[in-house]
Length: 191
Length: 191
Image 1 (cartoon, rainbow over the protein chains, first blue to last red):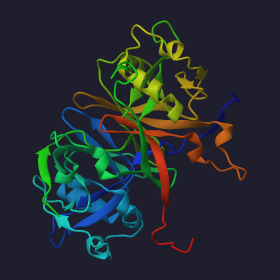
Image 2: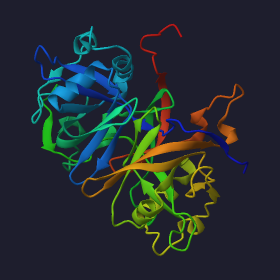
Image 3: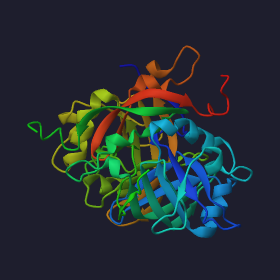
């Protein structure tokens, strides 16, 4: 085994989720918008909380700051190009819902829109805001999980593989590959 | 399109990274240990920072609290079962490096060990600690990135696909699937 190279610190965690954050409340001041987020992660299980990193210069930043809410929509493979698009164009000038023919649905707990075309959506309310540097990190309570009925199997359990989710690594989008095992399989070999 | 189901909030973000965090400094009080982390995400690009969520009852929690350091090792597909194992057994009783025949290497910037068998490792120093609930969230500066020379292509660029990384979604481990596009491809169709 060769010795590892030693590089300066950089954002090389991978793969990461790549999600469409829905924000705004539909008012004139805070119109609905979508922003693609790769700096997103679970931060706590109970209470369920996640975080998203957003640059202050992004249009969505002000929407989230003013409303204190956003949604995290998990996009399927079929929306990969839309995910990319929503990460490179600004909602200041363009209605991304309209442009990409996406359907905003009302949240059950928040005024921020969920995306009908995403099989899973998390409704979030900001709990803490951290000013870090290029990005501010919004830590939020997950108030509700919205799921397409098609993802629920005959036993009533969520079958997330049906969602065809995607990930992001080093500047590229990937579909999910084959399953390698379930949690605990290393010690429950007989299952 | 049917209406979405509405469930209580829960930890349904997916896919998420699944990494081996290396901790301890090799002393009697703080022996080297590994813990599998799924609640992990980038939080800032500049300065480069990431976060990991750890339950206070885990053996690694005290190691990270006392040393203020950890490493994030990105495991290849070949280590999926080891990743699972390091998430379900405690380092209180077992030397996971020895048990799973992994090689701890000294960090360049931290005393926490990196894992030789992981193609990419991030050396991290805790910057902020958030007490959230079931998990505490450690936000850390990424001080160095360690990379296997085999991942660098003939142009000197990191080819992360060679790392065969894995992800975690709803209790299952997955290998990475085919690439769907690169950042910006939706607006640079000619490339």
